[in-house]
Length: 409
Ligand SMILES: [Zn+2]
Image 1 (tube, protein in one colour):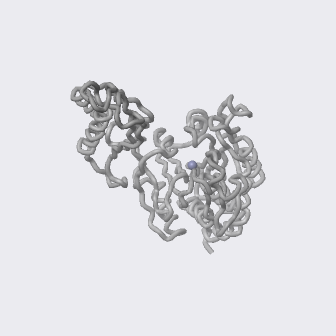
Image 2: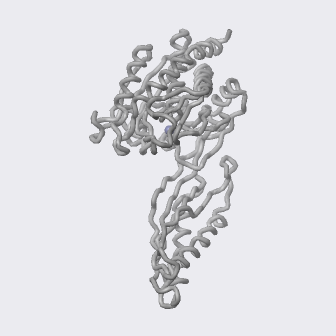
Image 3: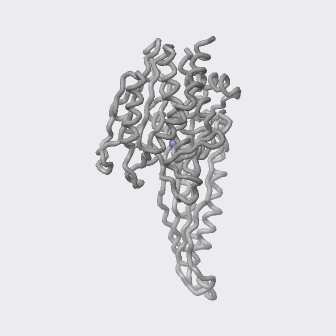
């Protein structure tokens, strides 16, 4: 029996314990104060107890001050299992906070009283991000229980504040107690795919814009007495579509492979048909390949606006709703990708594929700090939805993938 087989067998014996921990975690809702909750303190105390009782080493609690939270801080936990070689650490980072459940009538049961049904655990947070938090905790515990040393040190980071920006979570940890070394392997199981193949290594820049076009209101029968802001706004939307031609580059790492520039939300203008609208508001969601500076896109948009203003005699104000420049991608050939691919093939019998996504994973914090992190997990994709669930087989399988990575040299 190989060492991996021993650890995998041990993990199988944890199936009920893992499910019970999921249920316990759900009963301690960790919602950010800015979303109306009390933060993660209670959940962190429970997790610290688990880590202490199971022989984890080097425990530390990094407290990010937060006066809005009843405890006065947001807890970030670091814990280790010593490996054969301590020159590097294999990290699994998960987050303890959850998003609010939303409309309760949309749920089949109480989102904080998790329940098991047909191999799934239902409840808020079960997939995002308890599934892989529990998987990483038990994967490491299995090594301690079997008395098997991982190839390198194993580090678990259980961080706060992922859902509301990470300033008091991994952002704080990186700035204040940075425990990460350049050679470390960093896995963030907070994004993934249903078949378990997607290894996320890159993301596009995000640029969300609001366009407010001001013309002059008039009666629908005498448009010449006004300036139709809606017509000018609609014209601008078709102008903005030319961004696809201005930025046609493709990067096969991404699906879709090119930058996208899409009009999305539209605010209502006049409520009646026979008025020429004097004001018009629409929004665009732009996802830009990391090879293009976001500023280049903004400059091009400014030129298009100028043309529309001159053509129609309107004023167009553009306002940033969100702007996040993509971090430098992790190489598809990085060590973390190689280790994950081997483990995924062993456990799930599929080929892992390094890819970029549309944007917005917490791994970007590591990449900006110069660490080649990868996001990976096998998920049902129910995060943030009513009746969120975790497939128990995925929780166990992901634990085996982590264990496999811990054993690779
Ligand atoms: Zn998450």
